[in-house]
Image 1 (tube, helix red, strand yellow):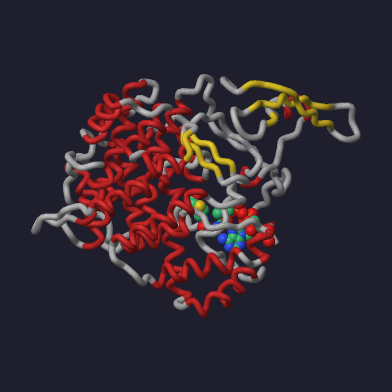
Image 2 (cartoon, protein in one colour; image 1 turned 60 degrees about the horizontal axis):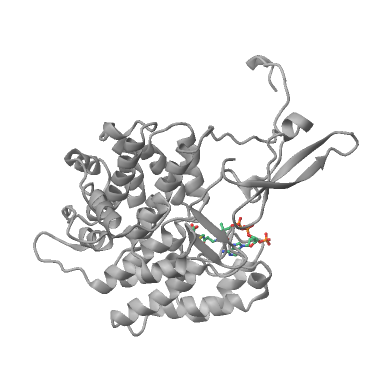
Length: 436
Ligand code: CMC
């Protein structure tokens, strides 16, 4: 470890022997210390078992901090609430990538560097024709982002800091363009080229909604809401998709391939697919009167039904992003003049019932970021199947920052978990005629 300090240790003793292993305690700048068990196998001949990695720190990072018990989320030390209120997504991108908030000149230069990469190679358009019109845009995003490495050969040398930087700009700039193209393809409209005079969020809304036949003006309220949604989703330390990006990157794979791997991991309903799943769930419940029956199903150990948008591996208190998302939801609906949104009423009723139910209280299950985000996005006219794509657009900067941090770490090694093998032991091959 490079910057973490050691203080104290834990000693693990193998019962029934006189063998022990001393694991130094590594202090985090904030949060619990970790036991460095790297000598464990050498000392005792055993590994640790931690399915789901709930207790295992796989890396050292300076990017994002979460205190799940207190509901705290910091990007580079700055509370998410302050960034959501006062910052912009582009500034947050700079912060996550570089470690500090930019001054005016730095932000101007960074914004310029990102916007200069918003277009994609014209030949990338051809990829889209290979997909069915009803392809899920996450499938398209995954494929086309992975294919970027075939177009941008001058940013594949991961040992060159300048090439890493250009790859970072390209990914942050091009993922929204590809995401919007995937959407346009799904509805049979022409692709809309990016506009570099618009902010990141404005340009994304423009590429999603504009058509060549008429002028399109971006609604500033929706652009602000989109910017905030992007800020809230920008990074979340070592979640499943980020860990996937790191694991892929640890092999030396190019950054475009790594981000495509992250997009694939994000797609699942337990992760980034949850925002889509929340709306599906609310649609299936139909009316608030059906909520108690649904909650009974969720609590039934024999059913696999989950309350989507609830629970989190790390937050055992309110997800601070969910609080901001709920407020933004009310603001957006008010600004759009939507007085009565049955989905929001149902979500609030669901939250009220769940938060007073012993099942959820005992398990510390609270609404997460995805519980309200879908309702805002729906109000903004974005179809459900695009929700996870939006999450991917926002998270790209987090993935890229984490990938860069890993590549730049001295002594970085390939990620390679161990296993508890419980299969057959060594046995001889049996010829076909002798098998039972
Ligand atoms: N509905 C009902 N029960 C739940 C839920 C839920 N949403 N989440 C957890 N539980 C129960 C779980 O069944 C278990 O019960 P028991 O102790 O009786 O076996 C207990 O709570 C502990 O849960 P867990 O499965 O050990 O928790 P985990 O850390 O492995 O899973 C999670 C975290 C987010 C995958 C899970 O809470 C979940 O599936 N939630 C719904 C999907 C969702 O909203 N995902 C978005 C996460 S936030 C955005 C992101 O980072 O992608």
